[in-house]
Length: 619
Image (cartoon, rainbow, N blue to C red):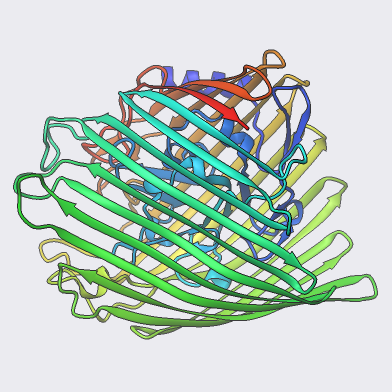
């Protein structure tokens, strides 16, 4: 009851700032968040007229956040759930709208980042220092991206460079900090534009933390020691505009060593290598017609070892492919039309100490999109066919509309289908696989409104339902996967933002869902059923801004029989940013201020109270 009262009190005191809203900066000026997004339709579109729910996390939100890593950042946003197996460096999964991590597509600059064996992405190994913004497109997007985009898409966009904000052609920054549990980090970046017009960005970071004991004594393989994390990363980007179009390239590489618990002689350390990169060209045929060709690659390498034990277990996956599309817009009277057609193909390969029997597969797809703008009305539609050499084909589609009922009040509705491709582990892992698996399939709809009654106020509400069929499940004692499960997720998300004046602003969001297994009527384990978040920001002076966040997570079932629950929890984060002068700033932050003890997975401890102090110098 105390937790509920605390959550309700914070909600009354703080009112949210979702993507696209405006809020005061520390200097008292108004910061306008991005109005254009790339992720929902795989091309640049207006955020305010989107036909599906989209959240944008920009650099200003990253700067204000107390989060030490990507999982800690994402967990505060409506529709997003993080299932973590410990603290920094521990395996973490992102769920969108009650769909599993394998049913949520994570991209880095539009490039798939998931492992072909596990089907999930190593989000713990993507450093915040390399990120420029994050776009979260919720709901089915398989018609745009193919497999796995059932719950939605998380597109992590790294720093892209370009002319500096003050007009200089080169600028950069260096940040150093210390943390408790004891650790430290150092990051830096350089960005700008050369004399011949090349926009560039290069950055790197290194961090290490002693960590804490991630597991309880009841966990399998529990070892009573701290589980540390060491990571290094490098991100690069370059682009140049020509009269005929644009050339661009970017990439992110990170390597982390994570410690975890396992019974000897099993491995208890893992080296994770993460890479996502692309090179592309956008050709402008005319003012209304352009084409894009892009080559991309992704690596997810995992090597498990134990000190003093000979040998290792390795799960290395590679993905490389080509994407091509052409986009044509034209007008008939007052109606603007946009046509997009394209194709993509990629190859996935597995190299492992486990004999999967099959080490590669080829995938190809063709797709088309049509959009219409007619005054207050926007319509988006898409159709895609994917061919996977392991199970055959899958056809997906979506259609959505948004309509401005009155100025600044937009209603939207969409319907779409999706699918998840079985992974190499689902199909070929020795003794625990089924080569006859079919893809999981989904259908979803959403109805929502977005209202901006004033410059500093925004309300967004969305109601949605998703039906999942042919879901892959397994039962003891064999744990062989099979296609029989059915599920239904019904949910509502609501967020409200308000800038009280030039110094005070806030936000609040409520996230309710009912994730049910339709075969037995029980709740799906480890799925959030209710979550509330609140935030308040205060520009105390022209040099000091303060941010406090509260997150309430209701109790979740921890087993399929719904006989075990993980208790509810409340966490509070705090961050203070102080501008020393025009070149230097300090940041002090605390996560989980009141040291709440909670878990998102049975017998795995979520992070307790942690401190961070950093200094940034720009040049």
